[in-house]
Length: 364
Image (cartoon, rainbow, N blue to C red; front, side):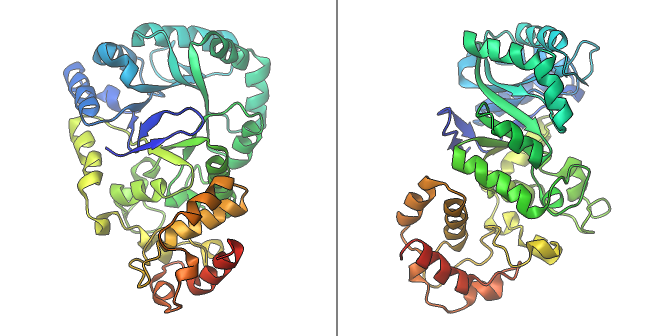
């Protein structure tokens, strides 16, 4: 397992977490064995927006003895009163649901208490007026809810709630399909979505990624909006390369799913290379660096993707990015202008010119 740190909370989070939408499909023994294997493999971040109530007692039994070593995303607005997942902004319903979840998880605290699935401004207004937000903030004051998160699929709405300063973690849908205008949750253009990721990086708000495979659509040529299949490892790397992202949360149904997604860590760079998306990206993505590193190896030893990322973040106002840039072994000032990166870039970015621009920006 590899780990990244949420700068706002100090939590060390595995880059592959555990999505629970489908684990309830397994029988009790398979669920228990899968959760035990996940923990033993270093998975420490678990999203609990599951599709069925029986997930919660399974987690309560599996992690009762190691609760302080795992991190839960618990959703204030996910309602399991009918046994299956439901959504609500009603404060009383949220209170009942959260109390039930805590009891069945056998825990007295919530690591990340999430404002759940706010995709419209009206949802946010109801969430505030109906008492759901007040209940969440009350638990934060009591120390029961340690940090606050937000799940949304809409950049403009996420930005509005980030403006409150409450959010320590954003759960957002990131994959090439959504970022490039394909799919049910492809809200916002490529640049609008990237601005959101950069803002999170700048402000230290971590991103946990949902729908990295677009519900499996990207993995099948017949359902992929691009007419060709991507792999799980390409989608995971794509998401992890975005600014602000700490962890990707693939849905796990059992031990076979878990073993397969964790194979990411032993996969080759070629297996993770998602540069193929450059052949079907829309016009507004052309000429932009997406940090895919397909230009490697640079003859001068420059990590071109990282140099571009720090430049974009610095221009977005992230003061730390400038320090990170200056600590690189090789910077844009070391570019020899050979054009190797330009020839290899699937997005047709003029990296040679961009290296001059970046060197001038940072004062060489």
